[in-house]
Amino acid sequence: MNTRRDFLQKLGLSALAIQLAPLSGWADSKHEPNKQYDGPVLRVAIMGLGSYGERVAEAMKACVKAKLVGVISGTPSKIANWQAKYGIPAKNCYNYQNFDEIKNNPDIDAVYIITPNGLHREEAIRVAKAGKHVICEKPMALNAKEGQDMIDACKQANVQLLVGYRMHLEPKTLEVIRMRNAGEFGKILFFQGLCGFTIGDPTQWRLNKQLAGGGSLMDIGIYAINGSRYMTGEDPIWVTAQETKNDPIKFKEGVDETIQFQFGFPSGAVASCLSTYSMNNLDKFFLNGTEGFAEMQPSTGYGPIMGHTHKGALTQPVTVHQTVQMEEMADIIFNGKKPPVPVDGYEALKDLKLIDAIYLAAKTGKKVEMSL
Image (spheres, rainbow, N blue to C red):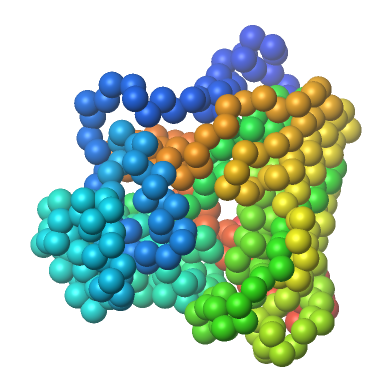
């Protein structure tokens, strides 16, 4: 990943402008929902009708390239409510036992899996076998082995596997990436990612090892893991980590409360990150280079992303992340569009390999060498 950055830094100004034009366009795109559109529409069924599923459904009202047409849930009352609210026909409603039947439903193109992490592998494989494209929330699976199984199943079924990396399409984030590619920060030296909040209900699935696969790292921590990669433009070559647990009753064996982790990159840059379920006010990215910096806070939240660099405030347009994500995923599936930062299964697999390494490093106290 750093090769492209080094290459861009060596280009002349005119050539650099040509190279960066596509990324600048993404960063400044306003994604006008009312603009006339007569192309193909991605018809999506949402699996898992919890709070985030509701957020995606509401955001899709503004989409022109994607449309909510179906639901999959184990709760009949939720299905009935969604049918009434979003005009979903009964023939497009399924439960977790019978959703394999979507293979016979030509009105559904893709299924967006928004269920607990521990269910993703099985559900994605079933969706792929039904011949439908798979969109999955992050982390894509519990570990790299499960992630590879999902990739293999989608490849065998000749369907796409995309992951809900909404920040890869967020304008202010893309502007920082553009600036880094253009060499405006100089040589990248350091990244810091702070992600956390105080979690509530101790009986929820996020604190269930079987369903979540861990604790804070498998939820909020994924943002710092992935963010360290897209902010520096490199993949880590080593990992170290330390776990802290102050409440072993709430955070049982295998469910992490707080993990600090560090990455080293091929260029010599380093990252220091924090993932926690026991502290609020943590949603901050900081990137530092020899010629400048970028600071974002909030850096990954659902509301407006805020930030500034050594050149001033980031003023790119505020977007509804899930609306933009679904519009762009439709373009990826139908038109082969290539986003500035990938949102596919291979991108997610790298994060899963890093999650595996972080847990190993925290357990052993040793540095884990990486090759992604």
